[in-house]
Image (cartoon, rainbow, N blue to C red; front, side, top):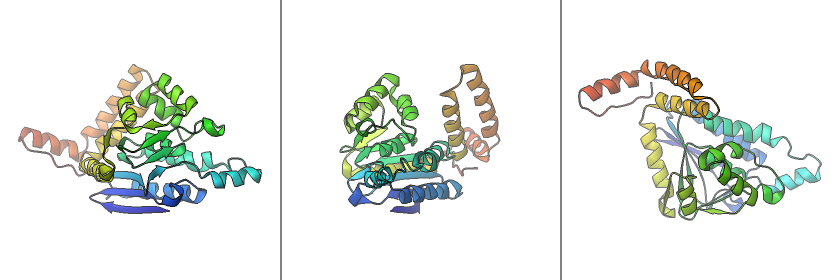
Length: 258
């Protein structure tokens, strides 16, 4: 259900239920969280690539399992708190860049997973669908937070209330995705981007993610103070020292993530 591979310091995590459009059962969500924790903890991994197999990125919650929970009186079976929230929190706070290769449909919580990633490379056949309202639910998996920050409050409200599918070209225009490429090239392009990030200043990237998350909910004076603290952390890294020396020598820096 989940494939995990490491190449060129990039951990590729693939949702692998193509016959079910990579929809998320409790077992899949637990396995995905384990894979993300593995990537986060591995010092040899400096970037993460999240994608799906077959024609979909992720269709969101497995509604067959969900319907069974409803009929049994278990409601959501606490899956939002036990599964979705920890997954999204780990993606957004991981001290490494996370790239989504959106190879097809990303719906509901599947779209939310893509929005939580730092960068999104989409197939020209990809579609995003905020399907929550269509089944009488509010957004989860951070969609109300991430989508509003990608496209603005007004556009996010429209997408979440109407639930109309968003094609790849329109997603690029709105800023939902980083780039759109032909379907046959999406995984290759996303992996090349992840490799580029993996070769970069990992600790500076982690600090950048922290700065952006903090700035989203704090004032400018507070953000300036946090930026100063983060710069203090970065200036003490070997990568910064080596890059400064390389700049003065008119050489390209080599980063080691420390």
